[in-house]
Image 1 (spheres, rainbow, N blue to C red):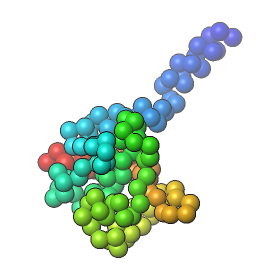
Image 2: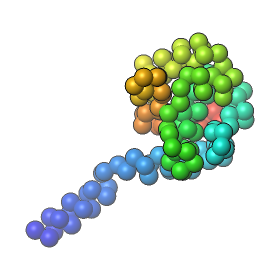
Image 3: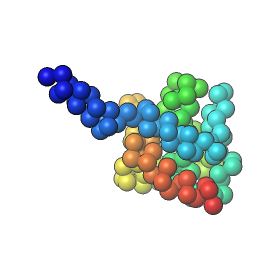
Image 4: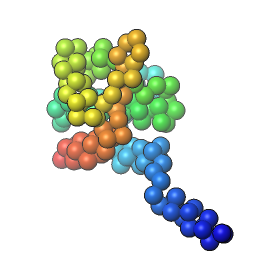
Length: 137
């Protein structure tokens, strides 16, 4: 019986994903490109010309989640108005791009009364794979 429990524990450590730990590993991977201000949120000017609109929105939501994970603020979501303001985009454009990101499973709307968007775990993987490659060039 002890052997069975040891095997289960060893397998749990190998196969069970700790989403918080995995996310922080990706934050570390992208740390050269993430700029967070505890008072005003993610700073995005340095990636403006290197990413397309969808990638910028996805990276912004990644940074919002990173700030929450690092205990800089209490939320991991953003509304269209905030995203548009921070990225210098029109709200109509943000709505369209967020809709595309939602269709691809990269972003979800978690708001009840007001639409609030959050990056999905799949979105986090895409940021780590695709956006990192573009930022490193």
